Length: 162
Image (tube, rainbow, N blue to C red; front, side):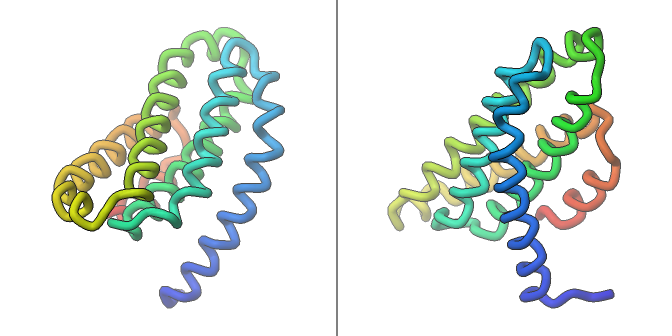
């Protein structure tokens, strides 16, 4: 089945609105994850910001949209796995969750910069932004591998990201 761009965007918008509601509900629940609750909660808050800020960027809009969609899918899969994990597994995952949260913070910072960038800044920083987007894609690929989340995520987003 082939989707037109319009239909694909409608599906993404529908998933995005569902993701926003799910995140708003999941944020307080994240505190209940032993050891990692506050880190996961903070990560989910950053993801919520990314979803809401993605439409305000003034350059590389499509790549930022795909990045935000990818962040949502990966974070949802990882959070689901963490909620099912035992105490020992959570302890082993602590550094990986912290690294993912750091990546999410950097993505948030980039989106904030792209939302307020002047035309001259956008022109001058175009290559740098492309490099950062590639780096974030690689870090999210690493998160997929580290957490052993659904390989379909990798295929789905790796094929369509750039």
